Length: 140
Image (cartoon, rainbow, N blue to C red; front, side, top):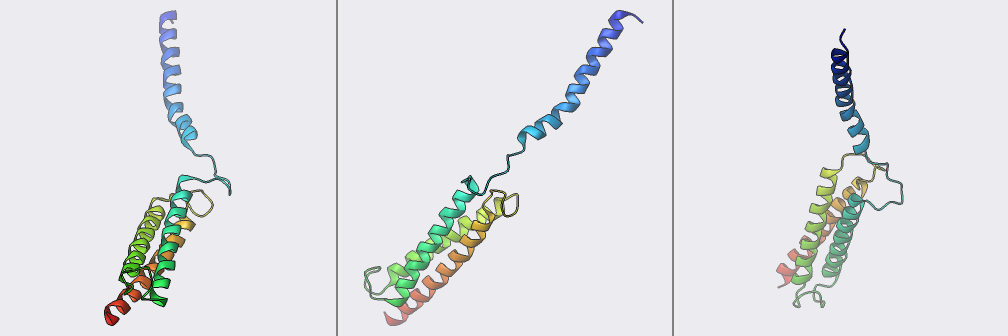
């Protein structure tokens, strides 16, 4: 065997070996580190924002339902009811997007638990806002 042939075969084997090993190495490099319980990841941040939006909508909807003639609206409570509907809808939509984008279960750092919580609180806020709006239309 000529030396030239041996060098070409050895070079092809090295290139082929690295070519086959590259996807496996890239897969290991792309894997995210597991998030600890105290790490604020992007998914957890978005689920927190969505939960706070839903909670604000629920509080405003509860106040509009309890006191329809308060300072939240124009005197009939319609403004507070509409604010609760909008904040609840925003919280539910963002929470739903977090749940849809999550690639793992609870504890992975994608915020799926907070997304479900935000979805539930947003729906409650929308229900309270809808009840307050119905009461405001009936009395006004």
